[in-house]
Length: 476
Image (tube, rainbow, N blue to C red; front, side, top):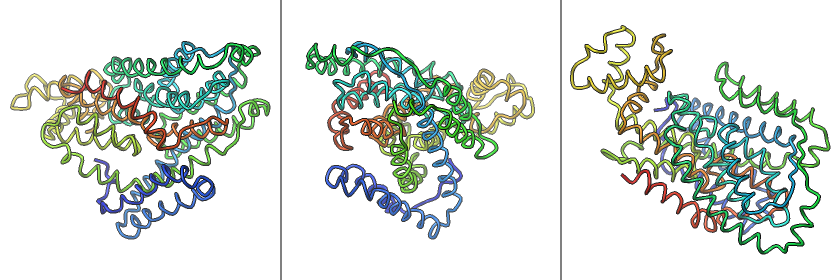
């Protein structure tokens, strides 16, 4: 469990609930007021939680930890926003439903290389342009579903929760190896749903309108020098020491991109800083106010799950909370609960002692002998260099306990899929969701409200897909 976690009063979750309610309802009922005063709401509710943590709980370390997480989050989101804004992709021909399906499928694949944030920021503008004569809410929402979330579940680069799992000791390609069938099913279901809706939308546009609007299009890529800065951002993701070097490199990439991009490229993308400003302000409030909810979850996850929980409980539990909380710490909380439920501390201790002493595995006996041998085999398979250097961490051993047992590693799959897939359920479920919404609104695209997103798209489309995934892979 995270050493920074404290024990807050559950009533302190109220500011987070109020902020969510404001984000959901204020644009619907008080649109003009909200557009002017949302910073005051976010900062005010965030201040309530910060004062409680600093003055009542004396948890300054926890606050500093969250501040670092926020800086890392906004550095990644912001730098990718700036760099992608310097790349202009012009498209050719009309966007038929089949063309759109292929584009979204490619976007889902790219999400595993550039991350869901990088892929979203790079592809959302050309996606809007290629559908400009018939762009509607379903184009934006299914882009968020597929490119900004579900697509990125195959590599640690794809989504932040998976990267945290990689840092805990889950091998880089392990998730792809075990989650590929689920990825194919989830993406396939969503693409089929999208095709049906998009086909109906496509037939509503008269042929002469389609031909007129797409006659002048041609493939053109401008600002490709920004691919260097994009590579710098992706490489910096893997840097953890010294502190803030990673964020500094991201800032350098953003500044370099902004000042080396030709003005006509920014103009073609209608680039300005309003979307990133809105996200930065709202997520200050979200990061601050969600501290009590995450800390309470971390302290109570194991007891809430009960004895001998099934994998489906981890899938629904991680997923439901990832819909409204940051999916990265939610993932860590349920991974910690998995350790508590299934990993015997005696096994971890004995494995550590064997590695340090170089003892003979064949000589291991006692009630934990098989678990120890399976754990050591997993460590040798996935962390051979660390075993040789005797630098294996307790987290890596705990993960190896799960990886070495075929009946237990399914829990890691359930947590991974829950964190990534369910992040698509709301605008705040994953970082790029709100960015895509802001960019689409800047491009004058009609996007659904917070509640409209949930009721018109999440419930009729995402939820049935999530139920099918549970039925096929986790109900046992």
